[in-house]
Image 1 (tube, each protein chain N blue to C red):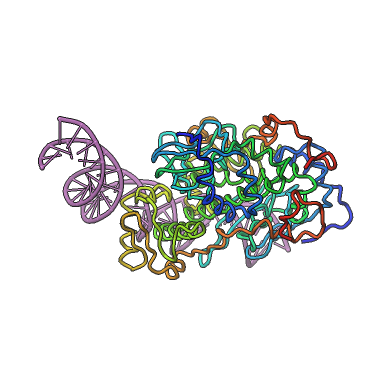
Image 2 (cartoon, chains in turn yellow, brown, cyan, green):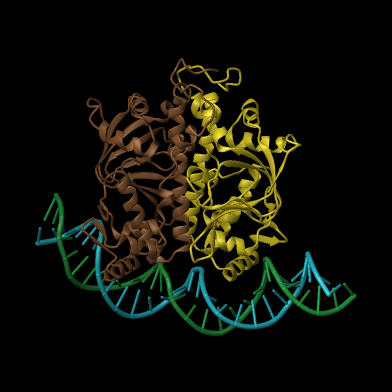
Length: 268
Length: 268
DNA sequence: CGTCGCTTTGATCATGATCAAGGGATGTGG
DNA sequence: CCACATCCCTTGATCATGATCAAAGCGACG
């Protein structure tokens, strides 16, 4: 990992848009986050960003590139818990523990904003609303894992794979990295197998069947979902869990009128 | 569901101890939460507390009794995502969405504090530190689901069941509802099967084998884990994920010395 | 005393794992 | 420019974990 001391502005615009979308931050609030003097860090493909068992003291807002979040099981190999996309935050769960419960590793060359957890926590005093929005966004992660849980626990291989691809499509669309029915990302069959708890040969088989049925096609890192509707129905995909309520909606329902933490940007 | 209009103090002491433990609230902060004028609600065994698809507008701090959090799958039956114990908060994930993603239903007669989400959110202005502690606690939920994910995705039936029982033991110990090796809770084999994505006859089989091996015994709602060490090793149980870092530790590492959140003393 | 829900047991079946081997690509060093 | 290594995809044969189906026993409770 190499910190880049000089160009601290370079990566902000893209990350800004993603933060806005994910955490409902107003531009003013986003600039509060960027005011925490984040470093831009670069990681090479394969580099570990968060290491299981070590203390996690910084959050990494992914600007560009992809990563995996995985857990090393004793004896068994590893279990990939999720794919980390631009706009996601590496370390957001690890920082809850004395020692990180899992690792995060760059899947491609990757660029991220690095912000010390302590500095974020201090927003509680200085900018409580910003802190709340960030924490609210973190809490929402559990919804994704709950969905993955029913994915792995209650669906067969075909449904799991279809569901996984549809989730990726939707999440990537949210950060403008996918069009209506396709996206590009360094997804191997081995990775899919690992995320979904399946074996590689079986993933291969199911993927071929899905292709024969004209539902999806995967070629050279590009996934095309030929019939989103049909696949969604087939595997029971409902995208609600990927569209959390904005915290703004909740706050604006409030009837009282206590002072805001930085007047002027209040959405009310 | 019946709101109890009169005795609003009755349930607080027990719930208070649990809140202290789970959210690192000081007594003063706990009383801020109780100052939100929560109602004590009673639910009968089998009653729905949160309904999938409906808007979730209140949080329910479980004081006494047990519940399940489950999802209705189309066509398929339901999938139980987790057991909800005293000290847990029903609705803590549902409130992130326009419509609750899952239901929560009382497994026994149950007593809970009901607090409107809006009122909690307003703590952001008045008591940002309390709000942060609560949200921090919610965010930590995702760690539990991530662990369940590797449980279901990467372990065989024996390991899953053992892991599940050890998690329950640990979580119940945290709220003084279990001793060193045993606890009581209305757990049926059907429920275990549903949580872990197994069939009832197979759960029965595995449970018998675990019993024959002298590892666990289940009788009349009482689970005894005869050899916690052996079982933990056998199934690879590490309890770290159930012991989140207190947010206090993070805040106290802060080098600056801003006044705390008491109204009137806050700068800015 | 009959019903209902939970547990137990057994027989059969299938989803998906494991093992094995070969086939492109791409990349690297000689 | 070729030899070799590596990584990923593909395919097939065999195996096993755990599902499904069926039926009966057993409390508890009204």
